[in-house]
Image 1 (cartoon, rainbow, N blue to C red):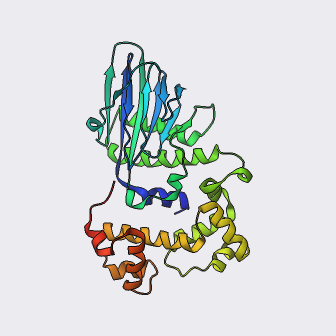
Image 2 (tube, helix red, strand yellow):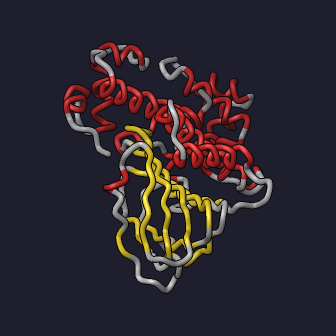
Image 3 (cartoon, helix red, strand yellow):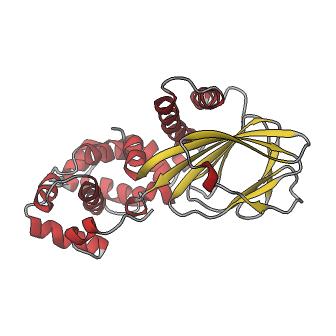
Length: 307
């Protein structure tokens, strides 16, 4: 996998959901803070207002997409002055469906998608994203994203045989296309910072790709620097500046969180997990794991996931 695909697949848990909402004026809903979730809202018909976490209303029209990566609270309404009521999302946790609510006035149709994030294995790329990403429907922009959401909306409106797989696959595509579109709309590469710059930097990207493809390999800073085509010192400085931690610290963290995923999702023994993650012994893996997660691997495996 490339790094972005790897990270998204790594963080997600459960299955995504999608609902086609029909709102008729007057209406106004607030989505409460939901840790361990991410989601998008796409305006299919009509218009509305986004009440963002900082309280500033943002007008939305057909084709506008809003992505909320951290599960922060926000609102949608036909009138920014209207009091908001809490959205009843519990009734819409099936894979896909439709719902209608509001009054008898002008209609706004919104496609809503939701994803579950495993809080035990969140990646720093997630924390680098803003609380709300707004992708306006600029003519000709992000054609792959537009095509995916049009297919998703059509499948939900008129589901046919195989709809479960089609909807799930399209929701995965939309999430990746949203993140790709966000990074594409950032400033020029020379002014990027953090993970935006790390993903856009060919040299650091090659090193990250090497770590993600083979975390069990006994990488050295020299080897990774060679992959990046940089000197050891120059690579180490640039990697730490963009990724937020030194190369080998990131490698260790990536090994441990992947080991944690294997403990939860497979029957592999702790010794097998240790070996697959590049540790010389179960003891060494257990000590490193406890430093990172606060509990030994066996206890972690028995504890419920946080999401």
